Length: 172
Image: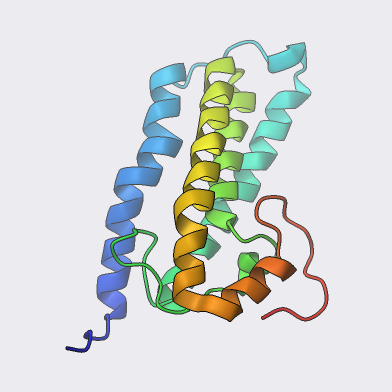
């Protein structure tokens, strides 16, 4: 029995529900629980860390938005593993890094740590990075290799997993 095509409206609703649950908790509720949005002394005693935190937040938001848009509109799926994209997404921020959503979330959380002067939130960012790395290496990448085969392999050779860099040469 063939799968029914997914409507864009349903994909957006699923994406918004997913964001309201998981990223909102990771980016919003946990940092709030740690800081209560109260400013602590600047990390490393440098006021410039607050500016860097603001820059990380400002950079992370559009990257996360681009990721969501491309998953729904180009990938015809959602960020939730129960309804993943049916097309390999390789444009936009995906040209710079294979995991722009995780990079954006880490930028947002680390940005909050620097902005609020919170070593606890910075520790949360480190825990998230480890969890994301393990999830990507142990689940996502094998799943993407199985679903997209040679196209995903070519994409992996052309685009780094974690550290964004400008696109080079021909990409899939």
